[in-house]
Length: 75
Image (cartoon, rainbow, N blue to C red; front, side, top):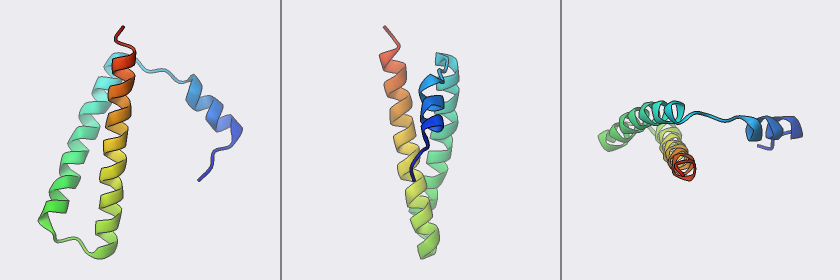
């Protein structure tokens, strides 16, 4: 999925406060824990498992990027 130029510009102009990032981190971490519990349960069918696996990967990536942003702006 590609982004058009206007969307890319919008993404680079948006800034968030540390508080907003911390709140997002809490929410995403909670969702990640729930998705990981579903993985452990082993009751998902193939397509549901694939979707959940992709969600877990995306949530971990989002949390990593938020942590990176918080660390870079801690100076």
